[in-house]
Length: 459
Image 1: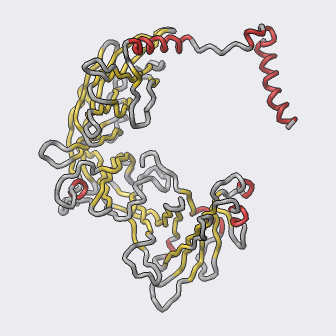
Image 2: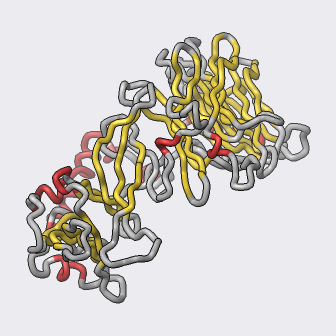
Image 3: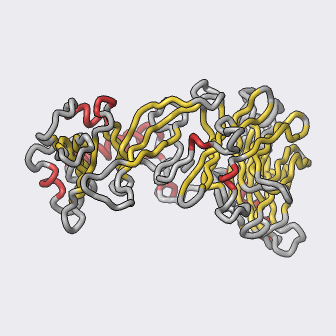
């Protein structure tokens, strides 16, 4: 403890010596730190809006949900302050104030006004070669209805470049010109939902559209669903072509993913089969895993779940699934990357060696109380006459005796890999080889194929 105290005091004494702190009065040393002048200037501008009856109204969703945000909108290296307010007494009560730094002061550069009940989301994007960023705003009109608008902003001016209703939208550099384009999913009156592609060239214009899978937006009764989309993500195809991955509910507890990319300036659904009107290659009825870059190579993988046969269990319910992860190219062709077993319940997945083939079955071995949950991999040809041969068990260990159980018998650690960190880990993952079949893996190879399931922001 004494050594630690000296380590803290050393830099403090050095600071006093180097900065001349010894020459300050007692009152100065204990004074409350004062905010910088530019902060005071910005606070003065914000207080003016509050004095007019304004209340802060931060965006409800997205990555930018602060009431006051800083962005370099004009590319001059200094950040503008963007503040979100509601002035209930005005015809357009929602206000986005943009304050521009001018020396140590802030001046009001522009104000974006909107009707509705809230600001749902905001994005700052470079949609053309001009230095000013465009501001894309989702206005919430009602709990179910939203309006999407894009603005160009300059000193004393606000130009609305686009306004449309929408079901969902995504921004991305789809044509690889180092500028952002906009894909809007919407349902025009009397028409089927579709994806629309917008680009900015002086004005934001509709460059084309592409259909979604029929089953993505049609319910069992044939009517169009209002909330068909469950996830919209951006990523890359195998040939490094940017794409938008739109996942929708499908049939009874299923999911389907339509993949959109831009070719020759036109939006296309690369996975859509023109004969069936659906992206049949991406349909899945085990939906606990979604589209993601699971191997970290910068290219998105789509899951293709395959049910595993349970040994001597005849119920129709599927207890275990294997996930074939596939990448698609711009022509809609797929190739498999690898296969995993995903244990969403326990928070881990395992990459299966190709050598294991299809001769595999799984079983659970959970102890009462939930402190130890195990999944055992067994080699099995599928014949009722042959018994499965267990060869590997992976454990999730929790509770007060988790460290002791992690070191029981021939178990070896998976996470944390460092034995010195066991006591500080609330959850421990361990594994154990069984003698029924030689799986061909070492302890280190098992660790390399084991991974904790992380929640992706885009999921």
